[in-house]
Amino acid sequence: MKLNTERLHTIWHLTWPQGIMLLCQFVIGITDVWAGGRIGAEVQASIGLITQCHMMFMALAMAAVNGAVASISQSLGAGQEVRARRYVGLVVLGCIGIGAIIAAAASFWRVPILRIIQTPESILPTAVMFLTATIWGLPGQYALTIGAAVFRAAKQVLIPLYVTITACLLNVFGDLAFGLGWWGFPRYGAAGLAYSTLVSVTIGAALMLLLLVRHRLFARESFPAWRWIRKGAPYLLKVAGPAFGTSFLWQTGYMVLYVITASLPFGKVNALAGLTTGLRVESILFLPAVAFSMTASVLVGHALGEGNPREAKRTLLATLGIACAGMSLVGAAIWPWRMELAGLIAPDPAVQIETANYLSYNILAVPFTVASVVLAGGLNGAGATVYPLVSFSAAVWLVRLPIAWLFGHVLWQDAAGVYLSTLVSQVVMSLSLLWVTLRCRWTRFALTARHPSSR
Image 1 (cartoon, rainbow, N blue to C red):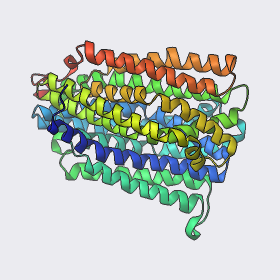
Image 2 (tube, one colour):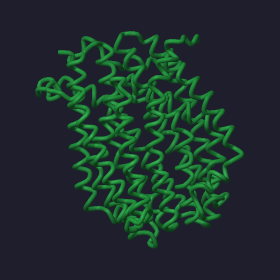
Image 3 (cartoon, rainbow, N blue to C red):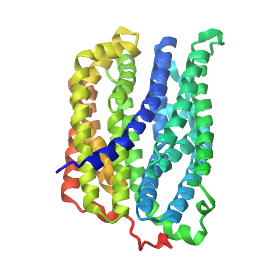
Image 4 (tube, helix red, strand yellow):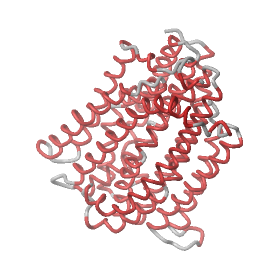
C-alpha cells in the first residue's frame, strides 16, 4: 500500500497531541505510584489494586467513548452536524448520570469489593481510603473522559490536551505537596495522594464541560427530543454494547490476574507490587500505540461517514504499519535498561527484580500489543466493536488466565508464569484482529446518510 503525504500528515497531526495527553495521564499515574513507594510498599500495592477497580468502574465510560467517536465522527464526516451535536448531548449527559449512579452504588460496597479481589488484610485500611476517593471522583472522571472523546471525534485534539495538562499539574502538585509534604506543606501521606487525584479530576471535568459549550459542540441541539433519541440511541447502543463487554471482560480479566498474582505460592507481595509498577512502566511504552489507535478510530469514522470504505481500510493499515515499526524500535532501545527503569519507580530491590522480569515479557510482545491496540481502535471507529469483543475476551479468558494459573500456581509457581500469559495472549489477539481487518466486511457497521437519526 502506498502511503501518500496527505495521509501521513493527517495521522501525525492527530496523533502527537493525543500522545502528549496520554503522557500527562501516565505522569499522573506514575507520580501516584512513585510517591506511594516513598510512603510504603503497602501504599504502592493498594494503588495497584485500586487502579484495577477504577478501570472496572470506567468500563461503561470506555464503551461510551467508542460509541461517541463512531457516531460523532461518522456524522461529521457525512456533514450531519445537527446529528453530531445530538449524539454529543446523548453521550455527555448519559455518562455523567451513569458515573453518579455507579459512585452511589459502589459507596455501599467498598469493603466487599476489596475482599472479592483478595486484598491482603495488611493493606485493607489504606485500600479502603483510596477506593473511597476513587468512587467520589467517578462522575468527574466520566465527564472528563467523554468530553475528550467528543473533541477527538471532531478532530479538535488540542483542547482536551490543554485540559489534561491542567489536571496533570494539579495532581502532581497535590501528590508532592500534600502526599510527601514538599515545600513546607502538611504531609498527609496516602490520603494526600488519594484526594489530590480527586480534586484534579473534578476541576478538569468542569473545565472540559465549559469548553464543550464554548466551542458549540454541546449546544441547544444537544438536547434532542424523545422521538430522535428512539431513532439515534439504537446505533449508539449497538456500538457501545460490545465495547462495554470488551472493556468489562478485559478489566475483570485483569482483576482475576491480580487475584492470581496475590495468591501465588511464593513472594506474593513483591509480585503484586512488581506487577503494579511494571504496568506503570509498560504504560508509557504503549502511549504512542494508544494515540495511534485513537487516530485510527477518528479517521476511519470520518472516511466511512464520507462514504469511502476503501480509504478507511487504507488509513487503518497505514496507521498500523507506522505504529508497529516505530514502537518496535522503541522497545528494542529500552530493552537493555529494564532494571534501571524499574529502579526509577520501585526503591525496594525485590520489587525492582519483579518489575524488570515483567517488562522483559512485555517488551517482547510490543509488535503484537501495538497491532492489537491500533486495529481495535480502527474497528471501533467503524462501529464494528463486536470483533474486538470476541478477540480480546477469548485471548484473556481462554488464553491469558488459564496460562497464568497453570504456570504461576502449578508449574513454575512464581510471577513469571503470570508474565508469560500476557505475551501469549497478545500474540493471539493481534493475529485474530489482523485477520478480521483483511478478510471481513467490517465497514458495513457504519452509519449511513439515510440512517433514521439523520432526520
